[in-house]
Amino acid sequence: MKKTVIILSILALITGSCGNKKVPFDLSTLSPEWTEMTYVDDRNVGVCNGADVLIIDGNKFTRRSVDAGREWVYEILESHKAGDTVVLNVEPTGRKEKYDFKFIWLDKDKGIAQWSFDEERDTTIFVPNDKLSEFPKVNCRQPLLSDDAPYDDAETKSINVETRSKKPEDLVRSDETIFEKEFGDLNNDGKKDCVIITKQTKKEFTSVKNQFDEKVDRNRRGILIAFKEGEFYNTVLKIPDCFSSENEDGGVYFAPELSVEIKRGNLVVHYGHGRYGWWQYIFRYRNNDFELIGYDSSEDRGPITEKMTSINFLTKKEQTLTNKNPDADPDADNGKEVFEEIWQNIVIDKLLKLTDIKDFDEFSIFDCYSK
Image 1 (cartoon, one colour):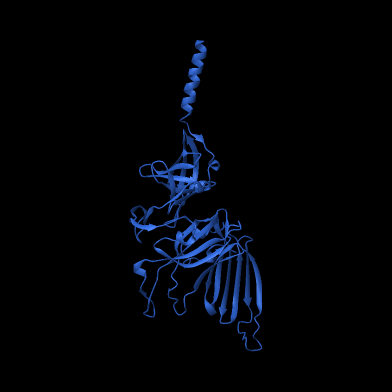
Image 2: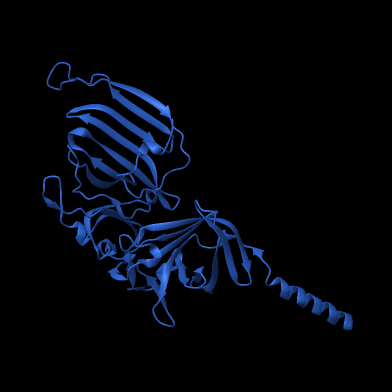
């Protein structure tokens, strides 16, 4: 009898000590996408407007601020479970630093979990996106960054931001206006999603003199994409200032005109430059993001097309059509354009994402690949 008691005591000690050991944890058992929440009262949780979004993708962990239009990407070096807490040991992209993100369920049935990013001040409630429909939407206020303030020193100006609404217009921040709106199916579910080109309303840029000494609005523009789910629109992407103002100076030319279109399930960002031609970027919703799959351009001289370029980043092919009769005159006998067609293979490391392009004015398509 004594031997049995001793053996059971030893097993109990071993079992108890194992509870504090690091046990490898499979992150694929967690939802890949999470949305920040806020408490309504001591009993309920509701969706927080202007929320952060968390994305777990293999060995990559992304924390994206829908409100600020920023994101932080980390490589997951290790994930383990210690007691009831899951710990992610991560390294920020491009920096040799290591952090621990901690996760613990508060209510597994409802999907309410606590993610801790900084033990001293940043413990946040999140819910997996497939559970969001179970929670009411509540209004909350988010800090608005000043132009030159670092993120941790954000000003506390109040703005309204919604991430879920029956009207896509309501998803636009209260300090922005709607410049353009387009509907179409972007995620191949048969429902009409919405793309909105937004425009900021910062006072210091509402009346700026241009090259003709005229006062124009130089506020930058951004993009908001919302998917239709049931009777609601849910924000899936928000970049507040990736496009310049429509009133930018074009030097000796006029500035190109921006427009968006949903075509064959793709998002097309088009720039028209009148008699000088046009170019466009083609994005497709793949792998839970908008990836750049194509680029087209036409270099024109009045009614004459001098060169056309078409790049398919999925097939890794580039087509170039060069006009061998650049002096063609549409009103004369030699008005016919004669094109030489050249196909080339291209090399890319990975598909670029829409969120990677912080400023379309500074972005060059030719930096994305090599031949």
